[in-house]
Image (tube, rainbow, N blue to C red; front, side, top):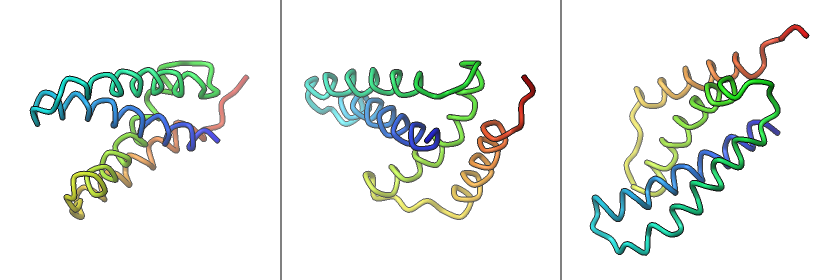
Length: 107
């Protein structure tokens, strides 16, 4: 379930940040900012749902998922195909996030 929350949070964060990118860099309407703010608030809420005793650990593990999701956005939304180095880096990050999430922790 944690991975699903992270994936949803990543999509919300990327969409929210992209709305600011579209407004500022692509010169889109300022109306793009409203859904962006809502999306970023949703991101914060979703990340708070992760079942962990330390926020920093939740954020650290989320970083790996965010990187992989960003490459999915790159491909699906921006139409740019990630190269083998992008994919290798994302795989390393997912492995690192998994170590953080799945490590046995003492009580």
